[in-house]
Image 1 (tube, helix red, strand yellow):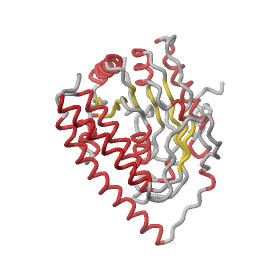
Image 2 (cartoon, helix red, strand yellow):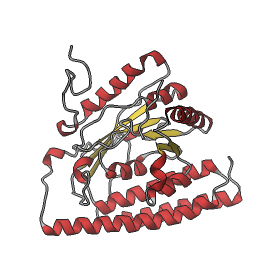
Image 3 (tube, one colour):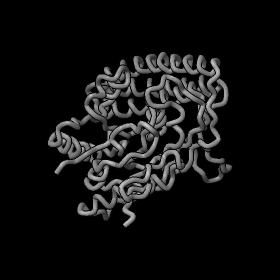
Image 4 (tube, helix red, strand yellow):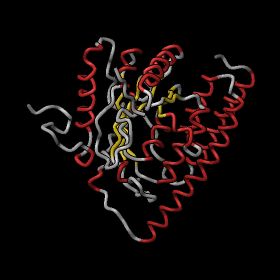
Length: 322
């Protein structure tokens, strides 16, 4: 059977580095919080005023030369900022090499600071919904249509969350090296037997260390922004860990940074956490049903421009019309 996937106590020096990381995060928050309109952080919906969803239909592209130049400036600023934070946290995690779990937490801290900073630089208006579900220990899944998705999940996933990606990520400049140092997980998608073993090891580590997981169930980035079919790996992990699944639905990121483009557009973005889906009573014989169920849930919460096209006698949710 082939499984397909989407993408110890600290010593004195480890504790010192962890506190340094916390100070750095506070420093970045203080600095960026005072510069221009801040990106709204995740907050509980209770007691907060309701906000209109960022509507991708309202977005009108602007091809004036000044907006193109501004986009280039933003991308260069993102790269330079990413380089600085990666070097800083790279040093921290080198110090923490003997403590794998501490490196995971530092990787999350790095993501919170860097992801928030990069989204501030890009300047897209962002609406966040369902953030009361954002601190649940769970398997977080996310649709993937843009590099912006990476920045958002870096910022918004809870601490104690580990990622899983293809082994080739180590060759990605900056991201790949910090990903490995942060003790996140890699799998060999070209080797089914190794992938199966990696999933088992991932599930064991998640249970043993009380971790959460973030994964792209499509397994790759959509070229058009339309939702792709889901792989089964996240369901296998849910069956082995019995953790709930929290879908994160991203809208508009395919317009913000398009495939094979070096231009970032100010499209409005929405991040919506859906309520956790319990997996306690799930059965291995119903894997296909669970995959289709969660895929259909995404289809229901995506705009028309991101729904999969109807084909081969199936509807936009991937369900049979017969």
